[in-house]
Image (cartoon, rainbow, N blue to C red; front, side, top):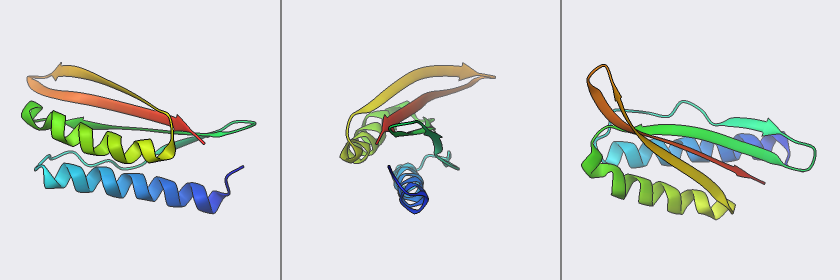
Length: 97
C-alpha cells in the first residue's frame, strides 16, 4: 500500500506537470488538485483539466498523457464542450497504484 507521504508527492507532481504544460501552451486553465480514492488493495488517482484552444489540444494532451503513463495503465477521456459560448475540451484521467 502507498503511504500518505507518497500519495501527497504523486498528487503534487501531477498538478505541477499538468499546470506547467498548460502554461507553456498559453492555456488559461490551471489544475487545483488531484483526488485520491483509497481502496482495499490499491489507491486510485483522479483528475481533470481543460484545454481552451483546440489547436493546442494535441500537443498538450500528448505531453500530459506521456507523463501520466509513467504511473502505469491510465484511463483518459476527453470531451468537447460548449458552455455559455465558450468552447473547450475537458479531459479527465485516472489510474490505480
